[in-house]
Length: 319
Picture 1 (cartoon, rainbow, N blue to C red):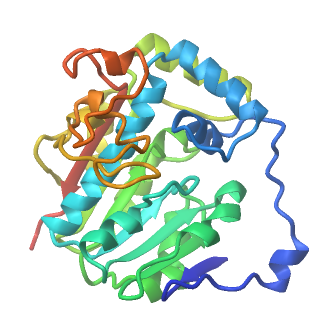
Picture 2 (tube, helix red, strand yellow; picture 1 turned 45 degrees about the vertical axis):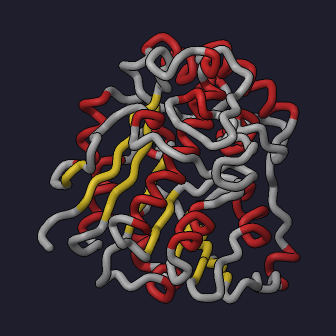
Picture 3 (tube, rainbow, N blue to C red; picture 1 turned 90 degrees about the vertical axis):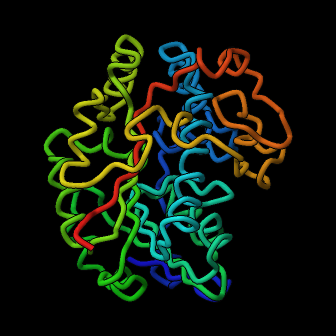
């Protein structure tokens, strides 16, 4: 089912929506809600907060890393819209909306930007229609689909009605690919999606890094497996394979806070303000506010902190 939001007004709920209440399974931890806890959000429950505490036992830098990842997404989106001239965005594995969302950043640079969000998660669906409201000059849509099924995504009427696949598209899959089920081939998924996009398109990925914290990532894999979720961290070389055939944008594949650090777009605030990401200035980014998150990692210098995540942006050639 698609969720099309145009002209600043969300579509009305259908009768089918009303008849089928969502089962959010709040009695067990959920990856998107655990991430929301780490970002300082409020869309989470006791089980999620308990798992977030366990995540911090394995990865004490997890909260700072989550903020660094979020800031990277904002910077990458601003780069794509402002410098690369991209006006179409396909964000797969959207997660719980946190303002500013990708479309808010893109349309803040280029109001005519078009964005399609993709997720198959009930918790995301429950919140997406209220928050993914785009600029009237552009278009913002939400579609329900499985990230492990690229054919379903590419065949979607919502995708085809919103984006012109004959023009460059920025495909983002941030903190997603390590969650794909064991029986799927994440490399084939990425390859199939990029095959459908024209030259000038970009791929944006962040991925849990095994080689930056082997013990911590191994502990996370075990903890989430015990809770019924599949998680697979990868090394830099393994993550680099997702970009095969593409050209990595400088500075290449690096921890997220090392990718073109600069002025931040704050989570839940404004650029350079006192929002969550704006407060993460100690993570290798600068913000006009000069504030820092109150975590051990943010008290370290930028050289000492390393988020256990690989992040990169690449462009498809052949223009």
